[in-house]
Image 1 (cartoon, rainbow, N blue to C red):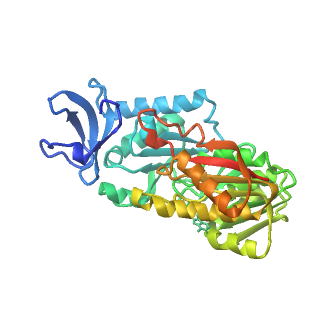
Image 2 (cartoon, rainbow, N blue to C red; image 1 turned 180 degrees about the vertical axis):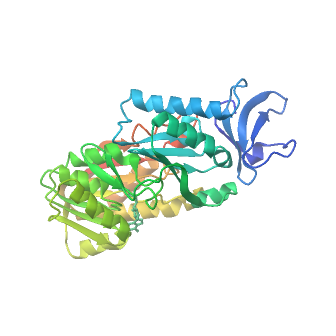
Image 3 (cartoon, rainbow, N blue to C red; image 1 turned 90 degrees about the vertical axis):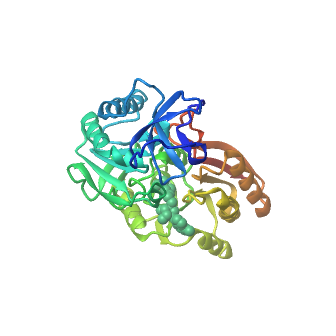
Length: 382
Ligand code: SAH
């Protein structure tokens, strides 16, 4: 509490006075009776309360949400991150002082996730303030993640406020354009955290044969092609994601003749290419989160090592591996060790030439280090 971390674990709670309802705002008081914070009560969760404010004079009402949301939007705008035709994470939960609330803007539409009991309780106020402050046309609720169960909430998705979004929303990600499926896409529809890293990949692809693993809707593939890639092979287990990847390639005015799409498990496909002696100049590995809790850490490391090892083997001399992990529980250090182990076992001399992190519209509050989750390395093999 004294470090202003926004989570209060159940083990730290001596007693609950009265009978607050799920998501209701409660006062957090120290053992000696001093007021500490105002927080949302999550009786079902191990995180029993999430702090709205450490300021006693502030009440978590609609004015409070409006003001905090205004600050979040202004912070992005001063950095030039919130271009109207583009897409931007406007609210990044704990890191933006709004625990459990994630809101992304895609063009004229907002797509949000309410992942905590407190967030759920106030979602009406939050959506109204967001529409008013952004001028967007509608707010679509994508609170359909299983994580909600930990908070005693059922998954839900649908229109929350305003107009229905179209089937696909087009966003300008400069230099690329993408179609986003707000209703059915992953998370809020798209992976904005990789925006800058997609650009970085594009800058290294002139004349290169690129393998884009875990391609989703083709993000890294499109920037690679815009950057002059000779060819691009997109791999994903999801056929609908690859269908949209194909449309995204077209949307960017690319011929598509040098692009392949393959519905496949990356683990198996990389082994197959090895058997076929197929090689590449650039490989992108952007897998989903492999680890949700500490007891999965070892298994996750094995997974990361497996794909990195297989990918390193397929690179031509001088080739580049863009390798990412979005598992918050895997530290930068640990990730680097896993990739180093993979290079060793692959028998490749390799060095780190760049490091990547999440885009600046996904900030990390200094009192919430858990907000840092995306890490990446650009590794060059000799
Ligand atoms: N790079 C993308 C985001 C990747 S998200 C972007 O920049 O937008 C992770 C993707 O991995 C998802 O599309 C998911 O369908 C896919 N995926 C998960 N497990 C997989 C597996 N074993 N093999 C292939 N694809 C997988």
